[in-house]
Image (cartoon, rainbow, N blue to C red; front, side):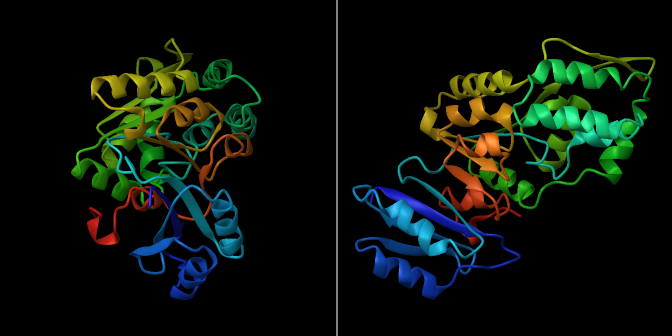
Length: 293
């Protein structure tokens, strides 16, 4: 069997069972089912000759909150992970939280969401948003990080497990380093890339250092790290949720949309709507007992 479809669900809401796997095996002759975590994740191994396999699998799981990631078996264990931050590695949009301290959260959040959806370019959206932050004391970042920012379920386990198995991990964000660097340290990434806010006398000036990090930066970071670690494209994994993640995800061996915005969902075949970020470990063939907690 040269290909595998990984079925995975939210570990807090198990949706897989033996009856479903048996039904899949009966319906699709020649496939093999194997548990990675009972009721949570399973592999369906198949040969790619039957073009209807993907369609039939989707039909069989359609009434359940189950995600599916299909890929070649070769190189499914990745050696490089790049991850977006907002609404991916963390559950929040960091810019929105900072915007609360300007009294213009709705206006700034709406502009940021237009960029995430791909309706406007990232760079001018970042500059316009940052202008509203002039005068804010940098101490506010510690308050936001402590009180409002939380890692997405599975984020720490994903990063620690991959690092423990020799992968390099990078957090890449169009948000700001005042958020990204502490989040990267908390979650356990090797490095982070994000925009730099200009600070004078411990207050934001309303400016951001050029160049602006956007979707192009994310893709170029992936390419740079791939060269640095002498990896083939198939050995890389990227995950994100919005329009400025598209180039990075399309460049990766496996690009996964996590709770993807519609513009991203249209571009990537691998999408996680239900499972947490440990799904990216199951997709690589890790079993639950292999996870680093």
